Length: 415
Image (cartoon, rainbow, N blue to C red; front, side):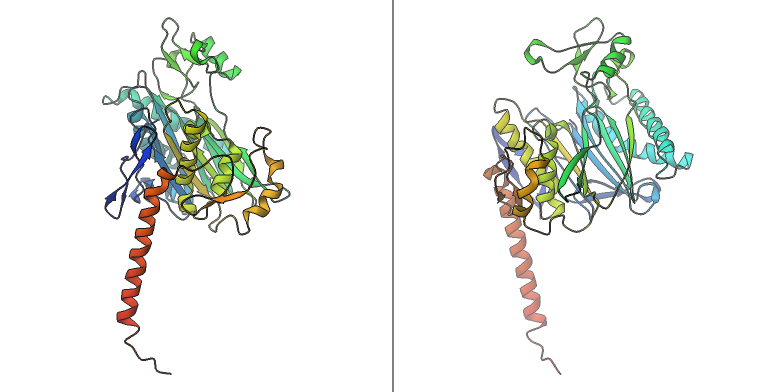
């Protein structure tokens, strides 16, 4: 799981750290940082915008190997978005994820410009995306500073323009869409398949190429990919960038590409690494994101819930890295009525495993209303953020009062 930005966070010049189970842990940076990409696109690797929210947080396994990126005005066209998250693995996974995070969108933009691909023409997009993925994978071999022989990264991407949504997936990160059913209730639609060796078609390809697929005794529910004659590297996914020790044995960098035409019922898309999906269901994810009042905070709140779920569900396991990008399809807040009204009928939407989670609405310590899904926010995890927000709000109000005293109260209005 790899990071494309520093793991230090600064608010008004301050560095804030949050308590974790084993002590203090650095957050992902949240300062807004943008650069200019190919064809004049606005490239964002942290922060939020009018339509996007993104956040990454290091787990307890070492360096953050998750990465994320958003390109606005992709291909130089207004209101075209490219969003992606990457999950590195192996000794150099963080470097591989970071490299692909920045090169893949550039490569895709260049290929599409060369082929004059029109957004919405899904067949043209599929060929261009596959070419960009394969060329990005080949570039890793030529990058002498990277050791990608036993290291690699997943990738899940979406491109959105108007009602067109094009999804690409490599590995076991995931993208879901939040939409509304005929009763106007929020429901999740999974846009990607977790490409693991447990999928029969994936395992068949690997076995035909001489690779082996089996699970270790201590984790019998996790099939992995192994070299023909060596018990390594034990890759838990069937497709990935890098991992060249397995590229001749069935692991490929060819993504699954799909197209969806959006409707007025669709609300937002969530892309996240498996640090989120391993502990939260699709239903829980959309309920958390939809319930956050400030869209800019959605990714961060979702990551905090995932971290808390790790502590609750797997108390003896190390929390995994998490990276989230939320792409909102509508500018205004999603919920204009009380969530208690919505929760009366929401139980029918949930999977059987989730139906017992609805009880009552509540507020996180940030003041964000979230449907109770049996996940409690760690008070220590949000305490520092609360203090920063209170400090920022107090400073802003004080500044406004000072301006008002000097500018308005000393002036006589003339009718």
